[in-house]
Amino acid sequence: MEIVSEKGVSGAVKILLDIILAVGVVCVISLPVSLKWGFESTTWTAGENYWFLLVFLFGTGVLGIGMVFELRQIFRRINDHNPFQRPNAVSFKRIAIQALGISAAYIIKIIFYISFLTIIVAIAFMVFGLAGLVFSEIFRQAVEVKEENDLTI
Image (cartoon, rainbow, N blue to C red; front, side, top):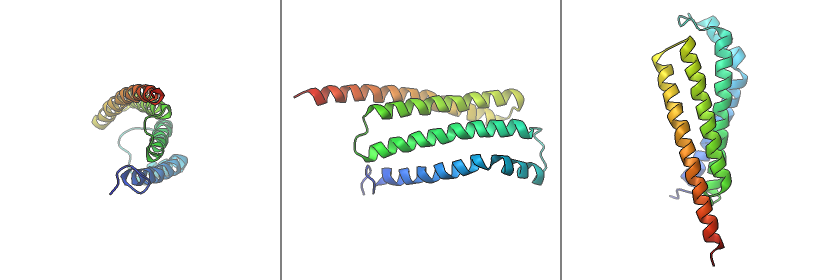
């Protein structure tokens, strides 16, 4: 079985990312209705209010959709058998910035509604964002090396 091709593992991952992207868009669009239904149908003990959660989930949802979109673009380029190109480095940087944005949102949430899980998610996205910045720089350097090698006769 091939790893990097449309019919290989990377192609399957891209299809999975397409599905996640579509489901994520539907979830974010339906947030006002689904969150209201959730508040009405359950006993809410956390003390979090509807408007805070709506803004919080909408903001982090949009950033999450952006991360999935960029990751999908990376896999599309990888399936073209040319992973070391500038757009991939840019996509990694965008993913990193969006992950750090999600981390910042969870840090703000900690101030208003602290929970152990919120702290874990904030730290996880911070690490993910910082790792994305590192990968962005590695891909940028790889592109420069590749461009130099392409110019060599």
